[in-house]
Length: 339
Image 1 (cartoon, rainbow, N blue to C red):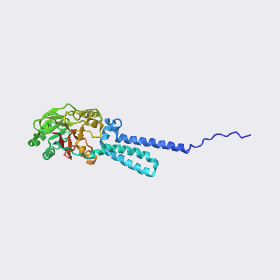
Image 2: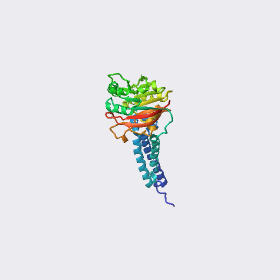
Image 3: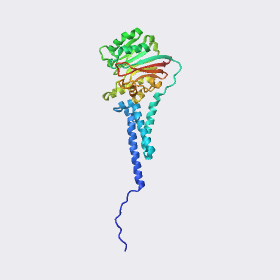
Image 4: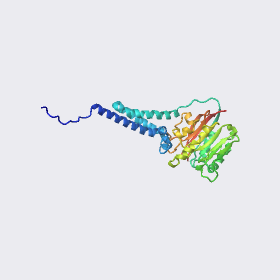
Protein backbone atom coordinates (compact mmCIF):
# COMPACT_ATOMS: atom_id res chain seq x y z
CA UNK A 1 0.00 0.00 0.00
CA UNK A 2 1.13 3.50 -0.73
CA UNK A 3 1.31 6.07 2.04
CA UNK A 4 -1.53 8.62 2.19
CA UNK A 5 -0.63 12.00 0.77
CA UNK A 6 0.63 14.56 3.28
CA UNK A 7 -0.69 18.10 3.72
CA UNK A 8 -0.17 20.41 0.77
CA UNK A 9 2.35 23.17 1.52
CA UNK A 10 2.19 26.49 -0.25
CA UNK A 11 5.51 27.66 -1.47
CA UNK A 12 6.76 31.26 -1.75
CA UNK A 13 5.53 33.24 -4.76
CA UNK A 14 7.46 32.73 -7.93
CA UNK A 15 10.25 35.26 -8.49
CA UNK A 16 8.52 36.56 -11.61
CA UNK A 17 5.38 37.33 -9.60
CA UNK A 18 7.32 39.29 -6.98
CA UNK A 19 9.15 41.25 -9.67
CA UNK A 20 5.89 42.11 -11.38
CA UNK A 21 4.37 43.47 -8.16
CA UNK A 22 7.47 45.51 -7.41
CA UNK A 23 7.50 46.97 -10.91
CA UNK A 24 3.81 47.85 -10.60
CA UNK A 25 4.46 49.49 -7.24
CA UNK A 26 7.31 51.55 -8.67
CA UNK A 27 5.17 52.72 -11.57
CA UNK A 28 2.33 53.71 -9.25
CA UNK A 29 4.69 55.57 -6.92
CA UNK A 30 6.34 57.32 -9.86
CA UNK A 31 2.94 58.26 -11.26
CA UNK A 32 1.91 59.73 -7.91
CA UNK A 33 5.15 61.73 -7.66
CA UNK A 34 4.70 62.99 -11.22
CA UNK A 35 1.11 64.04 -10.45
CA UNK A 36 2.21 65.96 -7.36
CA UNK A 37 4.93 67.74 -9.35
CA UNK A 38 2.46 68.58 -12.13
CA UNK A 39 -0.11 69.98 -9.70
CA UNK A 40 2.55 72.29 -8.28
CA UNK A 41 4.15 73.38 -11.55
CA UNK A 42 1.42 72.95 -14.19
CA UNK A 43 -1.97 73.61 -12.53
CA UNK A 44 -3.10 75.68 -15.53
CA UNK A 45 -2.80 72.59 -17.73
CA UNK A 46 -4.67 70.35 -15.29
CA UNK A 47 -8.29 71.35 -15.89
CA UNK A 48 -7.28 75.02 -15.37
CA UNK A 49 -7.14 74.57 -11.62
CA UNK A 50 -5.02 77.73 -11.49
CA UNK A 51 -8.34 79.60 -11.62
CA UNK A 52 -8.87 78.76 -7.95
CA UNK A 53 -6.98 79.19 -4.68
CA UNK A 54 -4.35 78.20 -3.73
CA UNK A 55 -3.15 77.41 -7.26
CA UNK A 56 -3.91 80.91 -8.57
CA UNK A 57 -1.34 82.24 -6.11
CA UNK A 58 1.07 79.33 -6.57
CA UNK A 59 1.39 79.43 -10.35
CA UNK A 60 2.49 83.08 -10.25
CA UNK A 61 5.84 81.75 -9.05
CA UNK A 62 6.11 78.95 -11.61
CA UNK A 63 9.63 79.88 -12.80
CA UNK A 64 10.96 79.31 -9.28
CA UNK A 65 8.87 76.21 -8.67
CA UNK A 66 10.12 74.90 -12.00
CA UNK A 67 13.70 75.53 -10.93
CA UNK A 68 13.13 73.45 -7.78
CA UNK A 69 11.43 70.71 -9.77
CA UNK A 70 14.37 70.60 -12.18
CA UNK A 71 16.71 70.12 -9.22
CA UNK A 72 14.68 67.11 -8.09
CA UNK A 73 14.74 65.81 -11.66
CA UNK A 74 18.53 66.02 -11.73
CA UNK A 75 18.73 64.08 -8.46
CA UNK A 76 16.36 61.43 -9.83
CA UNK A 77 18.50 61.08 -12.97
CA UNK A 78 21.64 60.61 -10.86
CA UNK A 79 19.89 57.94 -8.80
CA UNK A 80 18.83 56.21 -12.02
CA UNK A 81 22.46 56.01 -13.14
CA UNK A 82 23.18 53.88 -10.09
CA UNK A 83 19.83 52.09 -9.85
CA UNK A 84 18.26 51.55 -13.25
CA UNK A 85 14.95 50.50 -11.70
CA UNK A 86 14.38 54.08 -10.51
CA UNK A 87 13.89 55.30 -14.10
CA UNK A 88 10.08 55.85 -13.82
CA UNK A 89 10.65 58.56 -11.21
CA UNK A 90 13.23 60.37 -13.33
CA UNK A 91 11.09 60.05 -16.46
CA UNK A 92 7.98 61.49 -14.80
CA UNK A 93 9.81 64.45 -13.28
CA UNK A 94 11.64 65.11 -16.54
CA UNK A 95 8.34 65.23 -18.43
CA UNK A 96 6.94 67.86 -16.04
CA UNK A 97 10.18 69.85 -16.31
CA UNK A 98 10.11 69.81 -20.11
CA UNK A 99 6.49 70.97 -20.30
CA UNK A 100 7.10 73.70 -17.72
CA UNK A 101 10.22 74.89 -19.52
CA UNK A 102 8.24 75.07 -22.75
CA UNK A 103 5.90 77.56 -21.07
CA UNK A 104 8.57 79.69 -19.38
CA UNK A 105 11.66 79.75 -21.59
CA UNK A 106 10.04 81.50 -24.64
CA UNK A 107 9.61 84.62 -22.48
CA UNK A 108 13.39 84.92 -22.26
CA UNK A 109 13.89 84.91 -26.05
CA UNK A 110 13.86 88.22 -27.91
CA UNK A 111 11.41 88.55 -30.81
CA UNK A 112 12.56 90.12 -34.07
CA UNK A 113 11.65 93.78 -34.44
CA UNK A 114 8.88 94.75 -36.82
CA UNK A 115 9.77 97.28 -39.53
CA UNK A 116 7.83 100.49 -40.06
CA UNK A 117 5.33 102.22 -37.83
CA UNK A 118 5.84 105.04 -35.35
CA UNK A 119 7.24 105.11 -31.84
CA UNK A 120 5.07 105.34 -28.73
CA UNK A 121 6.59 105.40 -25.25
CA UNK A 122 4.58 103.98 -22.35
CA UNK A 123 5.25 104.00 -18.61
CA UNK A 124 3.24 102.09 -16.01
CA UNK A 125 3.61 102.18 -12.23
CA UNK A 126 1.44 101.06 -9.31
CA UNK A 127 1.80 103.82 -6.70
CA UNK A 128 0.81 101.50 -3.81
CA UNK A 129 -2.23 103.26 -2.38
CA UNK A 130 -0.78 106.62 -3.39
CA UNK A 131 2.23 106.22 -1.10
CA UNK A 132 4.96 106.13 -3.77
CA UNK A 133 7.47 108.98 -3.84
CA UNK A 134 5.91 111.62 -6.08
CA UNK A 135 9.22 113.40 -6.65
CA UNK A 136 10.98 110.22 -7.77
CA UNK A 137 8.13 109.39 -10.17
CA UNK A 138 8.23 112.93 -11.58
CA UNK A 139 12.00 112.61 -12.11
CA UNK A 140 11.50 109.37 -14.04
CA UNK A 141 8.81 110.99 -16.18
CA UNK A 142 11.07 114.00 -16.75
CA UNK A 143 14.03 111.85 -17.82
CA UNK A 144 12.08 109.40 -20.00
CA UNK A 145 9.32 111.67 -21.35
CA UNK A 146 6.79 108.88 -22.02
CA UNK A 147 3.88 109.64 -24.32
CA UNK A 148 1.43 107.83 -22.03
CA UNK A 149 1.53 106.89 -18.36
CA UNK A 150 -0.69 104.46 -16.44
CA UNK A 151 -0.78 104.84 -12.65
CA UNK A 152 -2.87 102.22 -10.81
CA UNK A 153 -3.72 103.01 -7.18
CA UNK A 154 -3.38 106.73 -7.90
CA UNK A 155 -6.57 108.65 -7.29
CA UNK A 156 -7.35 112.36 -7.28
CA UNK A 157 -5.22 113.04 -4.19
CA UNK A 158 -2.09 111.53 -5.72
CA UNK A 159 -2.86 113.22 -9.04
CA UNK A 160 -3.00 116.62 -7.35
CA UNK A 161 0.40 116.02 -5.74
CA UNK A 162 1.94 114.91 -9.02
CA UNK A 163 0.34 117.51 -11.28
CA UNK A 164 2.51 120.54 -10.33
CA UNK A 165 5.63 118.50 -11.11
CA UNK A 166 4.61 117.23 -14.56
CA UNK A 167 2.23 119.84 -15.95
CA UNK A 168 5.17 122.14 -16.80
CA UNK A 169 6.36 119.29 -19.06
CA UNK A 170 3.05 119.50 -20.95
CA UNK A 171 1.29 116.49 -19.42
CA UNK A 172 -2.45 116.37 -18.83
CA UNK A 173 -3.70 114.17 -16.01
CA UNK A 174 -6.96 112.21 -15.87
CA UNK A 175 -8.26 110.23 -12.92
CA UNK A 176 -10.98 107.59 -12.66
CA UNK A 177 -12.22 108.54 -9.18
CA UNK A 178 -13.33 111.86 -7.65
CA UNK A 179 -11.52 113.78 -4.94
CA UNK A 180 -12.18 112.17 -1.58
CA UNK A 181 -11.99 108.59 -2.87
CA UNK A 182 -9.03 106.56 -1.60
CA UNK A 183 -6.05 106.43 -3.95
CA UNK A 184 -6.07 102.63 -3.89
CA UNK A 185 -9.35 102.55 -5.81
CA UNK A 186 -8.27 104.98 -8.52
CA UNK A 187 -6.34 104.90 -11.78
CA UNK A 188 -4.63 107.96 -13.24
CA UNK A 189 -3.46 108.43 -16.82
CA UNK A 190 -0.98 111.01 -18.08
CA UNK A 191 -1.05 112.12 -21.71
CA UNK A 192 1.81 114.06 -23.29
CA UNK A 193 1.03 117.35 -25.01
CA UNK A 194 2.27 116.01 -28.33
CA UNK A 195 -0.77 113.73 -28.57
CA UNK A 196 -3.11 116.71 -28.82
CA UNK A 197 -6.71 116.72 -27.68
CA UNK A 198 -7.85 113.27 -26.59
CA UNK A 199 -11.05 111.79 -25.27
CA UNK A 200 -10.99 109.96 -21.94
CA UNK A 201 -13.64 107.48 -20.85
CA UNK A 202 -13.96 106.01 -17.37
CA UNK A 203 -14.74 102.29 -17.53
CA UNK A 204 -17.01 100.56 -15.03
CA UNK A 205 -15.03 97.87 -13.24
CA UNK A 206 -13.84 97.44 -9.67
CA UNK A 207 -10.98 99.88 -10.29
CA UNK A 208 -12.72 101.89 -13.05
CA UNK A 209 -10.12 101.79 -15.83
CA UNK A 210 -9.40 104.76 -18.11
CA UNK A 211 -9.63 104.50 -21.90
CA UNK A 212 -7.90 107.23 -23.92
CA UNK A 213 -8.72 107.73 -27.61
CA UNK A 214 -8.53 110.37 -30.33
CA UNK A 215 -6.02 113.14 -30.90
CA UNK A 216 -2.59 111.99 -31.99
CA UNK A 217 -3.46 108.42 -31.07
CA UNK A 218 -5.49 108.10 -34.24
CA UNK A 219 -7.32 104.77 -34.23
CA UNK A 220 -5.30 103.52 -31.26
CA UNK A 221 -6.97 102.99 -27.86
CA UNK A 222 -4.86 103.36 -24.71
CA UNK A 223 -6.15 101.73 -21.52
CA UNK A 224 -4.84 102.39 -18.00
CA UNK A 225 -5.84 99.18 -16.24
CA UNK A 226 -5.86 97.63 -12.77
CA UNK A 227 -7.22 94.21 -11.81
CA UNK A 228 -8.11 93.26 -8.26
CA UNK A 229 -5.54 91.08 -6.50
CA UNK A 230 -6.46 87.36 -6.40
CA UNK A 231 -6.72 87.04 -2.64
CA UNK A 232 -8.81 83.98 -1.67
CA UNK A 233 -12.05 85.95 -1.33
CA UNK A 234 -11.52 88.05 -4.46
CA UNK A 235 -10.59 85.38 -7.02
CA UNK A 236 -14.00 85.49 -8.81
CA UNK A 237 -13.68 89.28 -9.20
CA UNK A 238 -10.09 88.85 -10.39
CA UNK A 239 -11.23 86.44 -13.10
CA UNK A 240 -13.95 88.87 -14.15
CA UNK A 241 -11.52 91.82 -14.31
CA UNK A 242 -9.08 89.91 -16.50
CA UNK A 243 -11.74 88.48 -18.79
CA UNK A 244 -12.66 92.06 -19.71
CA UNK A 245 -9.32 92.47 -21.47
CA UNK A 246 -10.69 90.54 -24.42
CA UNK A 247 -12.74 93.57 -25.46
CA UNK A 248 -9.46 95.22 -26.58
CA UNK A 249 -7.22 92.27 -27.43
CA UNK A 250 -9.93 90.68 -29.57
CA UNK A 251 -11.50 93.98 -30.61
CA UNK A 252 -11.45 95.66 -34.01
CA UNK A 253 -9.28 98.64 -33.02
CA UNK A 254 -5.55 98.62 -32.23
CA UNK A 255 -4.99 98.96 -28.49
CA UNK A 256 -2.33 99.27 -25.82
CA UNK A 257 -3.24 98.22 -22.27
CA UNK A 258 -0.89 99.10 -19.42
CA UNK A 259 -1.08 98.65 -15.68
CA UNK A 260 -1.17 96.21 -12.79
CA UNK A 261 -2.86 93.01 -13.94
CA UNK A 262 -2.14 91.06 -10.74
CA UNK A 263 -1.45 88.10 -13.02
CA UNK A 264 1.50 86.60 -14.86
CA UNK A 265 1.64 84.93 -18.23
CA UNK A 266 1.53 81.65 -16.31
CA UNK A 267 -2.13 82.28 -15.42
CA UNK A 268 -4.48 80.65 -17.92
CA UNK A 269 -7.12 83.30 -17.21
CA UNK A 270 -4.79 86.05 -18.42
CA UNK A 271 -3.53 84.10 -21.43
CA UNK A 272 -7.06 83.40 -22.60
CA UNK A 273 -8.18 87.00 -22.13
CA UNK A 274 -5.25 88.54 -24.01
CA UNK A 275 -5.32 86.27 -27.06
CA UNK A 276 -4.60 88.73 -29.84
CA UNK A 277 -2.23 90.84 -27.70
CA UNK A 278 1.51 90.61 -27.21
CA UNK A 279 3.36 91.30 -23.98
CA UNK A 280 6.10 93.95 -24.27
CA UNK A 281 8.42 92.31 -21.73
CA UNK A 282 8.16 88.87 -23.32
CA UNK A 283 8.77 90.34 -26.78
CA UNK A 284 12.08 91.77 -25.58
CA UNK A 285 13.11 88.56 -23.82
CA UNK A 286 12.46 90.04 -20.37
CA UNK A 287 9.30 88.15 -19.51
CA UNK A 288 10.76 87.07 -16.16
CA UNK A 289 11.79 90.56 -14.99
CA UNK A 290 10.22 90.93 -11.55
CA UNK A 291 7.88 93.87 -10.99
CA UNK A 292 6.54 92.74 -7.57
CA UNK A 293 7.25 92.68 -4.65
CA UNK A 294 10.06 95.20 -4.21
CA UNK A 295 10.93 93.91 -0.73
CA UNK A 296 12.20 90.69 -2.37
CA UNK A 297 15.35 90.57 -4.52
CA UNK A 298 14.59 90.96 -8.24
CA UNK A 299 15.42 87.32 -8.96
CA UNK A 300 12.72 86.17 -6.53
CA UNK A 301 9.80 88.36 -7.57
CA UNK A 302 7.15 87.89 -10.22
CA UNK A 303 5.92 89.93 -13.18
CA UNK A 304 2.36 91.10 -12.64
CA UNK A 305 2.65 94.53 -14.30
CA UNK A 306 2.38 94.53 -18.09
CA UNK A 307 2.16 96.60 -21.23
CA UNK A 308 0.15 94.76 -23.87
CA UNK A 309 -0.36 95.59 -27.52
CA UNK A 310 -2.64 94.12 -30.15
CA UNK A 311 -1.29 92.43 -33.28
CA UNK A 312 0.91 94.79 -35.27
CA UNK A 313 2.20 96.55 -32.14
CA UNK A 314 5.60 95.42 -30.88
CA UNK A 315 8.04 96.48 -28.19
CA UNK A 316 11.45 97.87 -29.11
CA UNK A 317 12.66 98.25 -25.53
CA UNK A 318 11.58 97.20 -22.04
CA UNK A 319 13.03 98.32 -18.71
CA UNK A 320 12.17 98.12 -15.01
CA UNK A 321 12.71 100.99 -12.54
CA UNK A 322 12.62 101.17 -8.76
CA UNK A 323 10.70 104.05 -7.18
CA UNK A 324 10.66 104.41 -3.38
CA UNK A 325 7.41 103.94 -1.48
CA UNK A 326 5.79 101.24 -3.64
CA UNK A 327 5.76 97.45 -3.57
CA UNK A 328 5.78 97.51 -7.41
CA UNK A 329 8.49 98.48 -9.87
CA UNK A 330 7.75 100.83 -12.73
CA UNK A 331 7.92 99.43 -16.25
CA UNK A 332 8.80 101.42 -19.33
CA UNK A 333 8.61 100.34 -22.96
CA UNK A 334 9.06 101.88 -26.38
CA UNK A 335 6.48 100.47 -28.80
CA UNK A 336 6.23 100.47 -32.55
CA UNK A 337 2.62 101.08 -33.55
CA UNK A 338 1.01 101.12 -37.00
CA UNK A 339 0.83 104.40 -38.84
